[in-house]
Image (cartoon, rainbow, N blue to C red; front, side, top):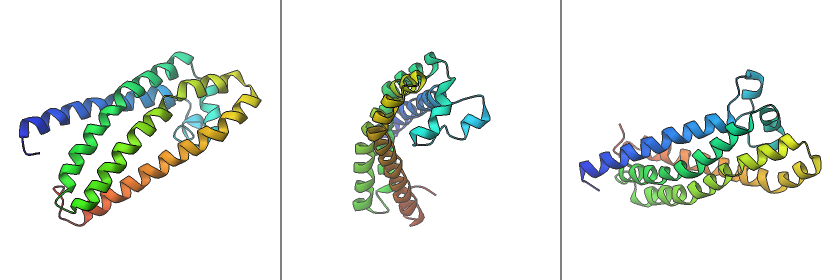
Length: 166
């Protein structure tokens, strides 16, 4: 893609999506209590339980909707990054793009569960909490590991010095 207007337009849209994604995370996983913030980005259900126990329901429900509707715009960002990584290695840039296109909906799906997880944690129903742990934690760990791999790949391609990144 070489059309500067298209690149700028996509960049603005992606930046808006990223801003809304951050806002979604703030509403879903932010607490004014610093003791709880240490666990806000954990993928362990046990670690995030304290975060959701005193959290107003409307905050994580709003965060859920913002994430589900705006984080998918990150797919456009993966496309733009792919364009900048292509000169380093077309093959690895394609792998980066494929992983990004795959992981984004998986991550959005996970983000879409946060309102349900928050309600279940607040219910203090230990049987239900134990049941969701079986599927929620592996899902969360797989998303975190997937994004770590994508991050390592982009770093590797940038460090070659042949991408469009300085």
